[in-house]
Amino acid sequence: MFVSPAVELHTAASAVLPLLLPSDTSGLAASSCTHSVFSMIKHLFIDLDDTLWDTYHNNKSSLEELYHTHAWDRYFDSFETFFSIYLPHNEALWSEYRYGQIDKPTLTLERFRRPFTGYLTLSDEQILTWNAEFLSITGRKTRLCPHALEVMEYLHRYYKVYILSNGFREIQHAKLTNSGLAPYIDRVILSEDAGINKPNKKIFDFALVKAKARKTESIMIGDSWEADIVGAANAGLASVWYNPNRHILPDDGVRAPMHIISSLSELMQIF
Image 1 (cartoon, helix red, strand yellow):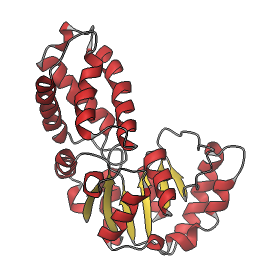
Image 2 (cartoon, one colour; image 1 turned 45 degrees about the horizontal axis):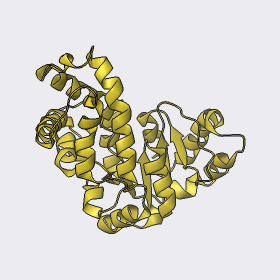
Image 3 (cartoon, helix red, strand yellow; image 1 turned 45 degrees about the vertical axis):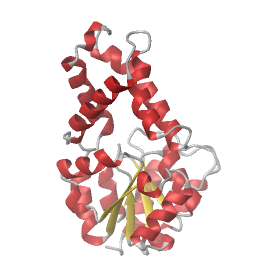
């Protein structure tokens, strides 16, 4: 499996990178050394949420169930109205959590309290009840990002595969089991186990120790520029950026990912 990546990689890079890079071509320089890098890879660290497991749609579906079960239409014109309020609050809270500005209990409470501000005063007990229901429903959702299952089955034949996630312990394992991804994962490494979140380099160092892996033999694959790609760069790890929405490559001085893909199926060409 290590004979052809260079040919495939240069072909894909020439098609994708010019659409994504800023005015300089630093990312293209990185692609010139990909053959030697990828031929050494033995360990794949892969993000879970919105990289393999379709967090956006699964969470939205779970919230819609709660919306109807608890008659939240008493407070909002429609579910879409509620979700349009909930989503930016949730994203902001996860960003704060990622950088250690808030803790898990605060995120848990505030992701429901904030959307209801001005509509309903909620006790902590009520929120925790809703949150438990939300996690229970969400853990049973099985929608994956396109090609995730076939790609993971393929990668697991040739590499050690690890999940590296900031997600909560009580839900991440359920996602993997119920979605069918679990058989293709050698180990799940969570930020709660490390005591620090991506993008802090310490969680990547922690993951390497747990996997008994060398940096030169490892690569990070994920959808989040900040958590996965910047985090990997902070730790001195190579990375592949899963960018299905084709966001522009940030011109922030961060080490460019070795490859940018818009479909997970491209991983079967790279590796």
